[in-house]
Every structure is written in C-alpha cells, then in structure tokens.
Image (cartoon, rainbow, N blue to C red; front, side, top):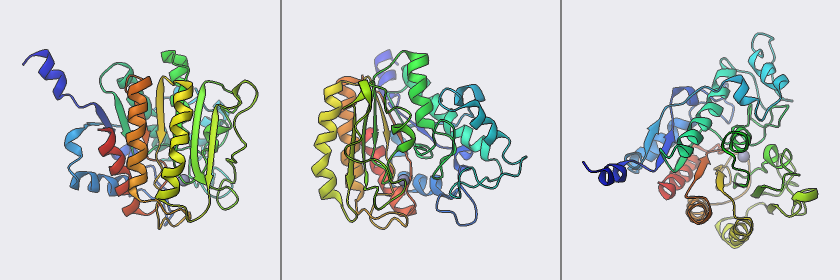
Length: 321
Ligand SMILES: [Zn+2]
C-alpha cells in the first residue's frame, strides 16, 4: 500500500471512550450518572459514526499533570477524599464516590492523550464525551466538576507545546466559570460562551459586560440567552462567535459542547435541538481549518437528558469526523 493510501485511511478524529471514563458519574440518582457515555455510544453506533473515527482508550493523568491547572492542595484533597471521609467536594453538588480520584484523573489524562496525539500528527481532532468539566476552578471542585480537564489542556498547550493563543468555545447551558475566571486577565485565551442567563441559572455569572480584564479586555465574549431561547436565537448570535474568533486568529480550538441546552433538559430552560450543536461544530471545524491547521478538541460537558445528549454529541461527532 502506498504511503498516500495509507494516510488517507487513517481516521482524522480520535474518540475517547472506555470504562475508566464511564466511571466518572455520581451515584444515587444524581443527574450526572455513570450511564451517560453508554447512552451516547449506543446512538453514535446506530448512526454509523464509529466507523469514521479511531477509538482511543482512556489514560489516567499523573498528579503533576493535573497540577498544571489545579493547586496541589486541591489535587491532594480529591486524592484523599475517600480516606478522609469527605462527603462533598463542594457545598452540595459534587459528592465523593468510590474511585472519584481515579475517574477524575482519567478525564484529564484522556484529554492529554488526545492533545499529544494531535500534536504528534496522529489525528487532527478529538471528541471526548465524558469531559469538559468547566466549573472546577484552580483550587476547588464545583457543579459536578472535580478536575477541569479543559484548563489542564490549555495550560499544557502553553507549557508543553508553545501554543499560546487558544480559542475556547463553550455552548453548555451553564456559564464556563472554571475557564472564564482563571483566564480572565489572559489576553491569549480567546473565549466565546453562549449560555442561559445567569439571573436564571447556575452559576449566575457570564454577563455580557464581562469581557476580560486589563490587557485581556475584549478577548472574552459572553452571550447570555433568556430562558426558552432555542435554535433561532442560537443561530442569530453564532456569527458573533465566528467574528470574535476570526479577529484573534487562534492556533488551536477547544470546544465544550454541553448538551444541557436542549429542550427538555431537567436542569435548565433553553430549547435547542441537536441542529444547534451541528451548526456550531461545523462552523468551528472551518475556523480550525482556517487558523489552526484543523486542530480542534471537543468535550461533551453537561447534558442530563440521555436521549438529548446522545443526539447532540452524535451531531457534533458527525460534523468533526
Ligand atoms: Zn452545564
């Protein structure tokens, strides 16, 4: 087989699924249960999407890797949470469960494995359904998010791969406060975040006038939508995201495609269909091709109605594959 044919048959997209990732889920009827990866996988399989991607196995991150974003204090708190009989890692949303450290470290490690493969040229894009834990801050867990895999990826792009200008795009129904605030004064983190208005939903942040601080002023675009907004409102504001990203010419795209903005999600009040996710993904692939040599990592984020998350994430995978 010639080199050309061989490279043409290698999938451009790595899909991170596996038992270690599936275990990231909270017990006792918690909305973020351990069955979400399976719900997505079944739908992606039924849609014939798995043939288009390379399945990649999860990897568990080392503490030092997690500490590229998080404080040592926080990493050690999670590591010893079961031994210390900690009940919640925050004030009531994020309970400790058996294997919490290892499952959380698998979310981070899989993201780093995807990043390494992209930078090595083994694939161009990745999708990791169990990931995109955008509420965890440098020194704390929050909102079902133990470690922030997205933050670790951004810090790793800078420290290991010398890529500074990163586009972070977040369409989860909740504001991505765990990325916004740690990078609020960072002029090279180009952020666009469409979410349900904070007056109506956790975490209450992400106002339109929050655009970055100091030298970073203007590098962050927050677009809150009122409850009951749907595809029409999403499509109306999306060109602002594209213009914002194009203005700063990023080198790499990180995409948090939470599915909790779909109609019927038990925790929120927007009314998207999977068409919103497809539109965003297709558009971001174009941005990535134009500025970033195609490089894009997508993460599933939130989404608590199983049928919704299965369809929204499959729509994303279809567009990036
Ligand atoms: Zn969410």
